[in-house]
Length: 112
Figure 1 (tube, one colour):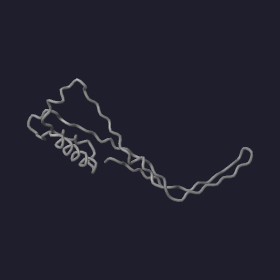
Figure 2 (figure 1 turned 180 degrees about the vertical axis):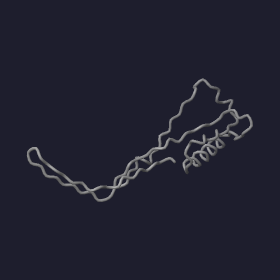
Figure 3 (figure 1 turned 60 degrees about the vertical axis):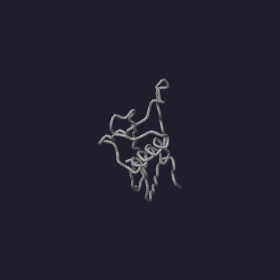
Figure 4 (figure 1 turned 135 degrees about the vertical axis):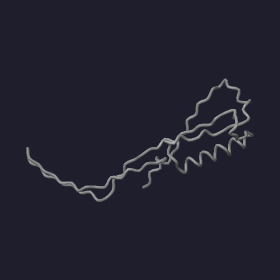
């Protein structure tokens, strides 16, 4: 069974409703901080931003752009347990014992 929850993307936007958006002609994509993860998603986001902005008539420039576009990728991780596991136990009144076999725990990080 595949878990698709790790594949979902949430996009949050915030903007000033009183800003004169009709005056925007040029844009630049802000450099990614060195502490940010580099991934396929990073390149896909950059390409999508440039494609959508140029399709709307904006020009990409690094010389005094009207707006600076910035985005962030937040890495997420999950723990996956796999391998055989067996346990049993016995108890009587105030005495008992049990035995467990170990399983492997793997940590997957998405977005990096």
